[in-house]
Image (cartoon, rainbow, N blue to C red; front, side):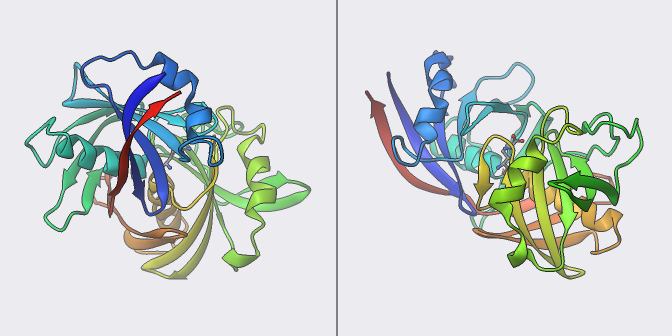
Length: 276
Ligand SMILES: N[C@@H](CCC[C@H](N)C(=O)O)C(=O)O
């Protein structure tokens, strides 16, 4: 297998980006995504992202998690995607449309190099997130029992599922131990990403994440958007707040038009060729 790629990171959430805009066959790369993402035997990444052509938008993004599963959307990934398509001269626009499993997402590359993204509307109905047992009701501050301990969860989909748990002390969360148990809890038919959140004040929160299909990552863009929504639903922050992650800070806004806007960095690390 041989392919060119570039390695990108956004708040420490890192990705292998493959340009397949000219319809190159990516099936072998997808089949080997777990090996490519392996931090000892591969490049090392939280996921592999493909730049693809689209019939309904300027581009299409496909994301494969580091365990080989496919996700609907990736917030940090789409900022890397945006800068990568610009750098590859696939567009001369700074703002364009991207087809994803979560609908059409609109990133805009700003003059300071950050990427501002219209992430669409959050999904709050239990059966659409999905979370079992709530019908089409919201899942706000509800009990979940994991490992014989009961937590309060708020659930939000940004195209992909998120379960947000507020904690008093983020440093006391045993992410590695309880993260996988949330991910595979039977109340989440499509599994879940889980965000543990300590609110510092009504404009600033600290979040750590266990990602579905990737485990502990240093940041999660969709998870940051879901976190802000959960904070607002639980009256813990204003509608715009900064989310501090292990690898950086994102600014998230839940605007009056019900859309979520995310702003943050994305940086290329290197380009290379995989050949084995
Ligand atoms: N890191 C991403 C989310 C990637 C997908 C996630 N693991 C899932 O399976 O839903 C982000 O920045 O949003």
